Length: 177
Image (cartoon, rainbow, N blue to C red):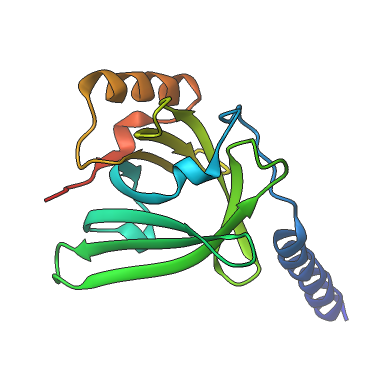
């Protein structure tokens, strides 16, 4: 009987956790770029640096291309080349604003109802370089409209990321050929 109660309790906790993750609102916990203009952000970005995670492991020539869908959401097209196999990888998703469209706080999904935060925390005035934080300290991206980023901009982003609690020693500098 005790095993049955334990199994039921475990099942309730597991279901509650799944429901929470499916239904939880994505909120920006960091200061994001304001005012933000989506039209200027759309287009192709080159990844300069990131924290490695499963999908991007061993990728080089990583790009993110953002375009507007008919329903007002943003089509996210991430691509790269696996350095070990030489195979092209692509992942399509969609992004939408967390709240006001003049704030750089978005949520992105590559897997149906599962969204993650995409917080644009630094952006130069010409929309040429960006620093993006995820929902937690596990996700960070340095992005640029070109395959390189100035030393000054890198330093500024590194300092800001470190001051925000990121372990910058874990950054992977993306090979862009």
